[in-house]
Length: 612
Image (cartoon, rainbow, N blue to C red; front, side, top):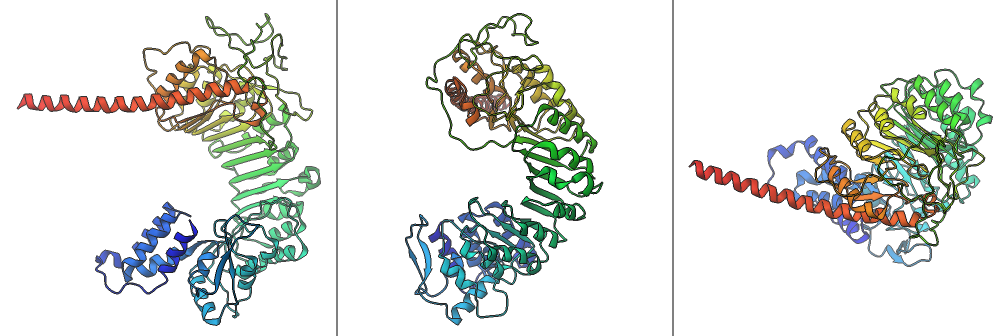
């Protein structure tokens, strides 16, 4: 929401409501008006369109004025809207080196009459995001609001606080906002180098006592003692997102009957002593887990102590897990109900680093012919092998299970031997018939063929998102052809997101017949590190355009890890051309459909005339 537009909206509707307007009796029902305003907010959350619509409703009639004005002020992004209706000589904007936008400042202290106006507006606010980067306020403004000339709360009806102000000097304002009406607290600090001083930690430790009715809380991911103490002081939490949790806090949360969603970090797995401290049947009511762990050694004892059956399990690890740990995780999940787990994610945290492109991105190195009896992979009959992105004469090493894998491209395995995951590693997940989302990204190779993919997805009829190694890449010759992809679409009618590696060896020319199946929900498809010859781009584009008529983007070779591989730039450029061709083909198909509809209507009219 731009500053001038937003300020004009809030300032205008603070005037008296219109006196004359004819309204249908239906709009005299207050519940209906509230539903209308809520619908406007939900459709345009955080946009200037919602503010303009609510402002228009407020100016329409006295009937709408109070309900629309309350809805307009119920959600605020930043403190600037509260200041604009005040005296014109109170606020001025100035350029600063800290912010790219002008900052609002005070010329003088607020007068009592101005405090009354501000309190009248603040009592309407139910959800407040403290800082708006587009309309920043000076530290002096925030500190002035910390000391209103009254013993009553400045925001008496506030329900949720979203604290996103990085400045340490303003953190005391959160105490002014806090109160028993607040049920949601989000403290988002993106500056990882920021130091939390004793005054700030003291304020943080006091929040459970001034906001005792908190049910949803998001706390900073930094590690400090006040975090665990604060969590132990709340007893009605339903959703928690925080940083590292100590053992006593984890034990306290394990017994909370209202807790439904838990997101936390584990730094010292051994220090928790889960085998002895965590009770059996812990977290029995939690349905959604998000766990960030240093490694996967924490997960086995944690899962063994869990009660209930989670619907969502997201795991992020800092070090590449060994194959045995991943297999153990998939096997351990089978102790949960097969009808409950709907969302599974296992990802290796990838540190940010610059993309590295090869010095000759368009130079293609030929892949050497495979020696006889070196592994179970067989090339498709009557098709030439494509060039792999490795140097001439290089024989790729065999993984422990016999598949050829590509070089890691500068990715550290942290001492873990690279393993190629096959159907057998994923089979334990086929017992979860309700799975709708699977997202796995690990620093190991993957090899699946058409039959493997069909065996997996046939067990997940509700699958809508399926992604394997979208960052690391498969690093092995994919055995999934267009046949396997079509079979997947036939099994998973709700599929909306997909990332796999595709074997394009068979794409030589555009076929004369259509495939006979299509998915209209797919807008973006990920093809990881799929290889493609220049001669196959048109045929691949025609195939993808046929089965995905609404496809707009193809993502391939786009991660930092994959960009470090030889010839990554060449393959990325080819897939970019495929994406452009698909976009153009889909436009042509739309035109053809319009022509067909026009011809059908003409034939229908001709038939009607002949019958007359």
